[in-house]
Length: 558
Image (cartoon, rainbow, N blue to C red; front, side, top):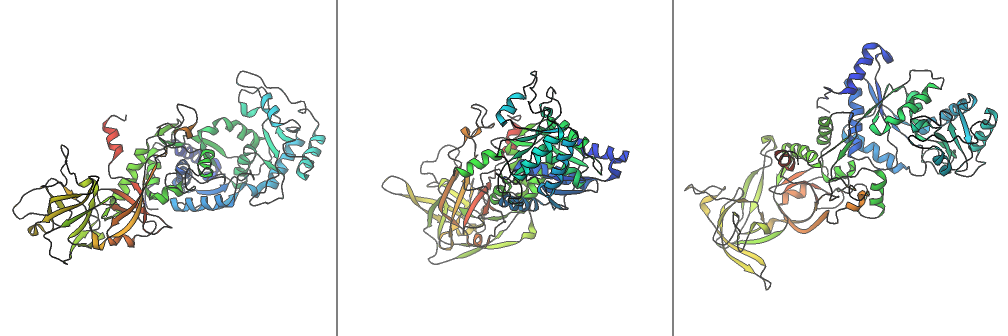
């Protein structure tokens, strides 16, 4: 990546700088991005990835990728592969790749150590009973009747749990901390549970699995992480994170957990459970559906990785959760694409225009700029004939006030070509316009009149004999509410049933057949579009041309 990584005003970088100045960790900085491979990464993860990798880069350190794969029931190699691909696409390269499952034996041995120290015990109660006994805020917990078993009995039971002697859910290993702690995380949390799931890496070698809270901090310690960066929902877990590390005979330094606000967007849901339901129920066409907030979905839709990185950095890091307007992210995408996207002409809802005074069989070619923002992108030849396609909305049989596009008797400019004047509209039996007859002024080649007369509209077009047909998917918000679920408590209640419109029979200039997957082009006057990686001549609209974020800012952010 060539862009500058800024750390100004970043409280995380201030903490790291202070640690380095004090000689903590001997000036070494190591972070990690630790996803659970139970789904695809989404836009919220992009913020965490950027923070993790940038923090290390700002201080000459390294950032690793660790898969926190401690739940065999929900994890899969499909998700592992997608996460690896998404991180690389986003523009980051982990120093090393680890798995929490690499440490299963070490975690187990440390659990036996806790038991021997009288700081962990096997509980025979079911999960519902254990949960009820934890109490609540202002309400003391109830100690398990098995809490004071002696170490020898606990160790025997724990080893038999590992050996598979007991059914799933019949016993757990719990830390012995404080059932009256104000922090609920410290009320004898579960460290191990019996779960006969097939693990994507260890297969069937284990029937007991560590919980996230037991595996996370110790995995950080094993790897030598110095600053364990996570989002604010883990603030309450920090005392437990520290407690677990404090009980063990670690050989190296204890990592420091630091929390920052996660990224949330309006009209968006990032709960992996709910996203998985959208996929399972067929509401969307998979995790990479362009309507999804997953990185694979955004990539398929045409979002540049550079725009996402810039957006995440611009949001900065804070200690207070907030929700950003999705229009702001789109503004970054639009700004990026405006500088890089090639311009092309495409007609999504075609209406035929026949130029009646055009010489029969004549074809002309016009030199058109590929990108006015970048002269180095050069020009291309666009064919022009007497039969054209224009957008249906660019003609009005009875033009309303302030309609300056084509209507009978009105002259308009065709982009880079000629002035034309509509002379007649041909309608079908229902009264719908099916063809427009027009004349052209040969003296206006290139789009300018020698007599200096002006027109109020410039329209795009495609030569009908030279056009290629395509399909285009137009997208609206996947959720209708700015805060999905705010009214009912269930975000999926606010799903937009009209989030996608598929247009077929679109007419496009032939140059669009050369568009390759990963390339985004601007359809002039219509927006930015990305070709589907698997379907020929099928385009997804990335964003429109109108800067909705700028309009929101002018209205005072409302």
